[in-house]
Length: 36
Image (tube, rainbow, N blue to C red; front, side):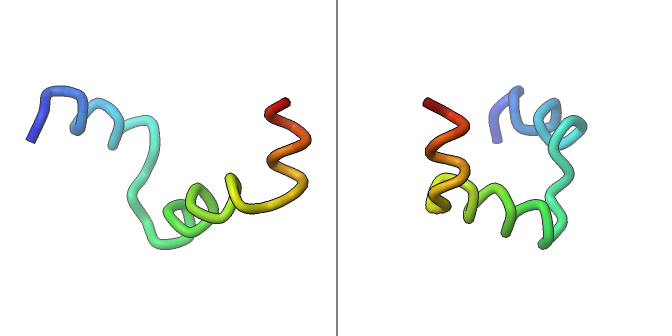
C-alpha cells in the first residue's frame, strides 16, 4: 500500500458503480471527445 491510496480513496470512493464508471469512461467515444 502506498501513501497515496488512502488519500485517493477519500476523493474517489471505491464502490462498484464508481469503479465501473471510471473503467468505462476511457472506452467511451464521449469521454475521448471530452478529454481531447
